[in-house]
Amino acid sequence: MYDILVTSKSFARYNPELIDTLKGNGINIIRASKSNMSAEDIAQIIPQYDGIICGIDSINKGVIQAGDKLKIIHMHGTGVDHIDIDEANIKGVYVGNCPGANATAVAELNLAILLAEARGVVKHSKSIYEKKWERNLGVELSNKVMGVIGLGYIGRKFVELLRGFNMRVIAYEPYPNLDWVQKNNVELLEDINQVFSESDFISLNLPLIESTMNIINKDTIALMKKDVIIVNTSRGGLINTNDLVDAIKNKTIKGAALDAFTNEPIHWDSELLNIDITLTPHLGASSIETAKKVSQIVCDNLIDVLIHKKADNMINYKEVNIEHSSEKPYIQSMISD
Image 1 (tube, rainbow, N blue to C red):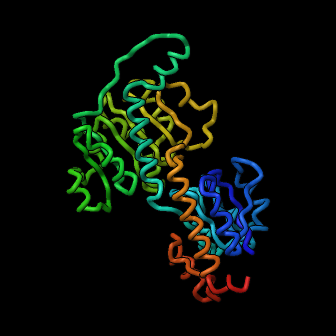
Image 2 (cartoon, rainbow, N blue to C red; image 1 turned 180 degrees about the horizontal axis):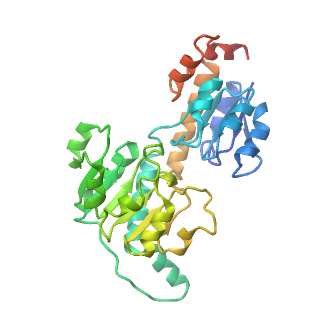
Image 3 (cartoon, rainbow, N blue to C red; image 1 turned 90 degrees about the horizontal axis):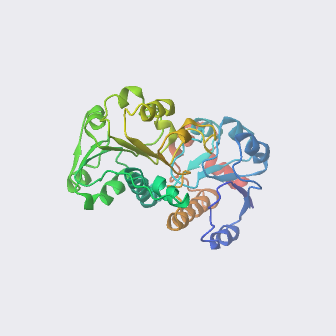
């Protein structure tokens, strides 16, 4: 029997039959005893587990080194920047995720909070509860320029949702799907600075890697229009928070709508709480439909890796096999565990 620690709150919540499916295949699911576990918390208990299904918990080097029995780390979602994949490669631990499974949910929230910021929906809603009847002018999306940075699953879905707004869509994407770009009338720009300078709205739909860290900073903000609104449902590290706060306070740009933060949960003394922007608690992928879809993918992948010894769906499949090629192949060594 393989024991799997689950720190993701939504795994199999809406399709609980998956727990029985896994158990029938010799995989035992044990949910974490508390929410929002730190890396230190996980490291203390991980030695007894063969795998972990995580949310955005930090699965760092310490966690992986402590995982004496660890064979698989599976993200209940897409982003894996919080997982030390290099260390997983060294330890021969497979890392999995669910690419594209949350695209619709995140793209819809991207549009929702952008509209909320553009029209001041949150602020006006709060004023009603405060027994105030106040109205301030917002801005429309229609017939404006939307700049999209990143045309992966989510970025493409977001563009498709914009069809009714009659917008000019410009984008930066190093590895574009050219057929899709042409079909959806997207202007692909070679210079990312053009996206910053020409857009009325900027949407970040990127993974957090070294080249995208703080892609929004004082220098790129200086290129933008003064009435631009930035929306980010990807990763908080894409934006230099201090530079964004300064830009909002100084009215260098108009606003922002954020669903992702450098520190999560957000620190309650964060300056982001002192500026008038739209904030949501990283709920981009939080839809029932996505939770079901992602849980099914995780279930299938666990069975493939642990039971059928088939790991080609893991994102570090090649690296693990190369790293351990001179030893007994890891996927085969699991048979005797």
